Image (cartoon, rainbow, N blue to C red; front, side):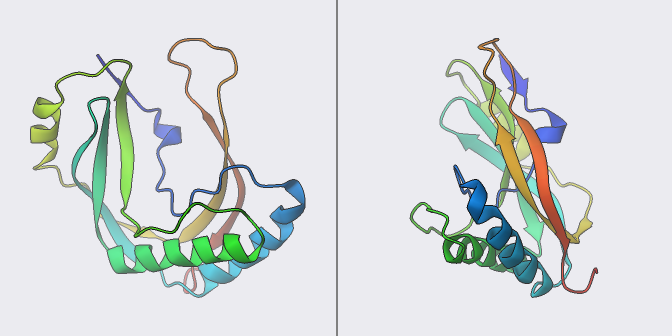
Length: 158
C-alpha cells in the first residue's frame, strides 16, 4: 500500500546538508542569501514522474530547470564555503517524493499514470533553508517535520 507524503513535507531539495553545526548556520544563511540574490525568479511546474526502486514514487519538474540547477549549484557551493561537510557533488535532478510504501511492490500502474501528468505553472521566488526533524516516537507511518530556518527572495523578487 502506498502512503502519500504529507503536503507540508514536499519540497525540492537543492542541496542536502545532513547535520549542520549550529555555529556554521549564520555564515550558511549569509551565503544562501547571496545565492538567492544572484538568481532570478523562474517558472516551474510539476511534470511527469517515476519511481525510486519498488517503494517510492516521485514527480519531476519542467520549466526553468536551468535556473533551478544553477540555484542548486549555488546552494551547494554556499554550504561548502560555510564549512558544511557535503556529499560528493552530482548533477541536480529536480523531483518531489510524493508517496512511499513500507514494502516493495509493483509501481508500474502509478508510473504509467504519472507519465501524462502536467501540473499548473508557478513562479519560484525564494530559497529556504529547511531543517528536517526526524520522527523519534517509532510510531509506524510518522512523517518527518520540517522547519524553515531562513528564507530569502530570489534576485528580482525582493
